[in-house]
Length: 170
Image 1 (cartoon, one colour):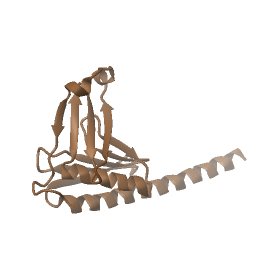
Image 2: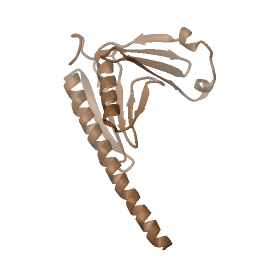
Image 3: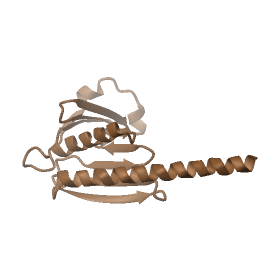
Image 4: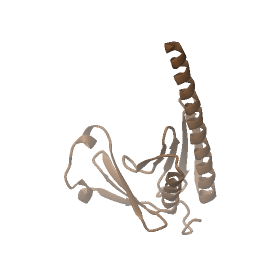
């Protein structure tokens, strides 16, 4: 009976894994199409797959050097990255979280993002089209792990520009 349970559990896991992989790929495909409509010719887009197809990564690099690069990662969760150390939003594949991802992507491409950068840490503040501000703070290894009270007050504030200099997108 143990062998049968192992087979069933393994089979269930494989089916769930395949469904998750398809969901991640479909979401990254959808977000790539969305990004392409927003950026036009104002950014280069590269895509790669790693870990036997389990991780899909989309890099969006603006031509404007004063705009913020964007990375979209599809794996067991959806990850949107727009910062040096901070700015990494981990989302589920629910319709609400995918909409949240689209809103963050649009804000970054439109230049509504400020990053506070300090010793191996940063905080990214993105203002969505609705006016809501979403913030994510991240820390790197080493100095990033040490508590530094008041680091935000002393941090370098970088206000990123839109990908396209012609004003609001979309």
